[in-house]
Length: 386
Length: 135
Ligand SMILES: [Zn+2]
Image (cartoon, rainbow over all chains, first blue to last red; front, side, top):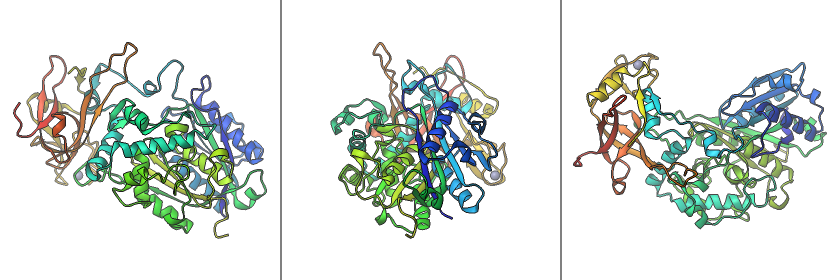
């Protein structure tokens, strides 16, 4: 029994204050069930993913008043969690363990009158131990670790900041057509180059947004989804990849990612190759993450991601429409639910001004940690094999 | 360069005794004869959660680097940029560190060596400088 995504719920996103992550999550699950045309008490499974704040957990079921669930757990593979949740839900549907599973991510790191950078920032005058020394010397933001990865790719393959900028620009082009996106004013390559440094080689416009909010989906059987309110989005394949790059001689850190593992696994399960992918929704915590993922999936050769991005392939009208909702760079930052939610919208044909023409096969990526954890989903508006 | 005050945490006495004496101490699992980073919490080979310490040469090569720029303050002042790096010790482990190296010299594989800083208060720490350079 194959699975399909039947419901999508997206709360208000961005600088939305006064709601806890638990409240956002509950709202998103209600919206997703309603979108599917299901009553809340028709859910028999709930998978919960929280941000770095650690809430909500499985108490969300109680918040929602869900009873007699047959599947309930919190999952965490950081940015790869959304893909992992969908695969667990799909396997639970297939085995009969559950029949309608809500998967939700929620986070609320932003507080009023505070810049987004400081939402995650900690400053201390005293530092403890070896890790404290590293932080004291200046390595205390995720930006710096991704910058080290991107710089290694640049030094090894000649990737340029302008090539990263092409990703920022094309992603914003898509965002300008998405009413859900937080940043919709068009930008140029000059705007990218002139945006302030965050951690060289990353400019501000290489970095994702920070958002409050929640996104949920409901997964059920393909048969049941066909009778519900929305066009089903069929789950054709999934994979995970956790390369375990040890920080020691011989490590491929920055040069390749778990997409090289999860991508082929998901495509094999789905019975497709990269040539069959019509649309990509790639986890874009940074422009560089998109670039290296494209290489690892095989859309271009290793080291050719920069040229591929600069070719215009990812932009509206390009050969491989990518991050068609504006991604995390310009749309909204809901971890792996950002690419997944846009894939659902596009597969349904509900993309409005940004709807792509060819959408038979969509690829969705997730990326967590510092390129430590990866997930891939292949989804389609068509039944697998139909 | 003001980085704040470094304190020990109970797991790093050998490391900070080392920096005080201008020696780079890293973990070494005798059972597996493998060098590990100073903050390794266990040996991946045998699971030992308290591998021993060994003196490293202090020589390394540059893996990657970044210059971090703090967010400008409300009064427009900008924190001093920091040149940070991943370096590969000759013994194999990688360290996150800070460099005192001219930007024009930065390249993959640049030979480096440890240099030590002894602040008035708190533990001594190390940076890396270009190997063979003067000063
Ligand atoms: Zn060992």
